[in-house]
Image 1 (cartoon, rainbow over the protein chains, first blue to last red):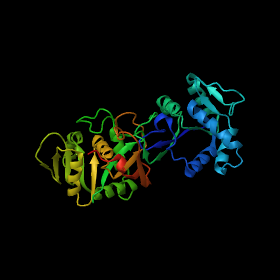
Image 2 (cartoon, chains in turn purple, brown):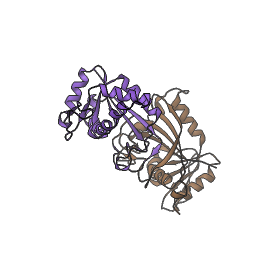
Image 3 (tube, each protein chain N blue to C red):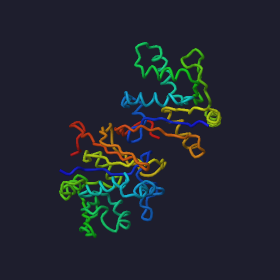
Image 4 (cartoon, rainbow over the protein chains, first blue to last red):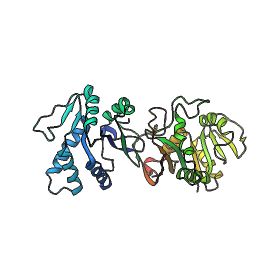
Length: 167
Length: 201
């Protein structure tokens, strides 16, 4: 059985984004990239909430097309491109021609069952970045039923004081 | 010059105590979990005991809030650390001598309490206790460092350390991160605000 791992970058006071969802202050540097590529190498299905999926979908396919991309970023782009992706959303519709248009979209009501089934059958871990709405939903409903197995929290030394998305 | 330290055991979701703090339950419901690390090591030379001893040896004075004083006194039966302790309160009270040191009651605000504590600390650390007073110290630019034990538990509710801090972010510099099986010991320096975010006059 695979584990479900949530990886999040949070400020010391517990925010995963600044006001208005601003990620500009998050220290996404070389250490962060190395950490992520290591996580991805051993992971299977990436799991997303709608917002994080949108950000990744707009970014990583572009990196993959960029011949001048840093090797570590190119590897992350390649690793994320080749695996099946799962997005939990009630509103997202994906065109098959869109980047990552082959991702599976599952409604919230079915999400828990789908994740449990995936975990039972997968040999490699399910890995989720960001996606704090989904994470909190699973924490509230699933943690004790062992749906989530690992929280990978990188605290960075800054206190936002105010933000859209604490908890 | 004494440095002013906020020293707390913090749940991963940012709480320094559970909900429903009372005289009977000074750490709130489930809040005792946050201090478990102090008793989990069991050996004299384990990381947690070492960190605890180090902290204890460095404390020269304490500033605490009235509520922390009220719920804590019966547990300590003394000052919280064996050093002069300054309680922020609106009530005018005579100093209260305890076994190891005395409580002094300060009526004219946190800056004054911190000033008095620094004078009493003999160049050792001034530790601020109680979430509300700690927030004031951070907001007013009085805090020099954060000494935290990050406890691997999600309490879900309770008293948050980091709130009521006003606008803008506060930059910190990570000084030390020491892992034990029970908690992660973190030390941060507070980057002092420039003139743009000074202490309110």
